[in-house]
Length: 83
Image 1 (cartoon, rainbow, N blue to C red):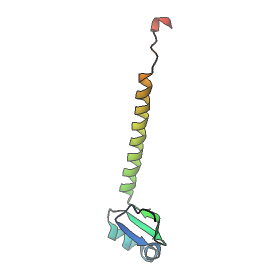
Image 2 (cartoon, rainbow, N blue to C red):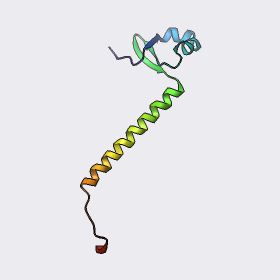
Image 3 (cartoon, rainbow, N blue to C red):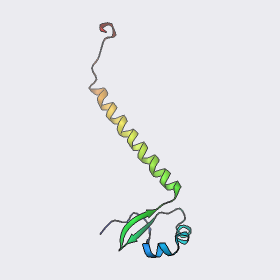
Image 4 (spheres, helix red, strand yellow):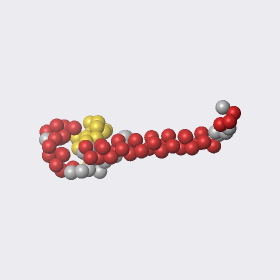
């Protein structure tokens, strides 16, 4: 059984009948659209999608910063006069 990451779910058949009604009923909440009781896709608002993309970008930046901080600990000191 697959995990469903939404508080609301609907069958794909019901979704096809009236997608606009599903959008109105969901408001700002995500909806799992199911095919044979398994998530086929998630319906989310543009606002939520943008927030997810920003969160992923922030996590990438945190990962990059941590890698660079780790490199700092193993940095080799260079005397500019030696260059």
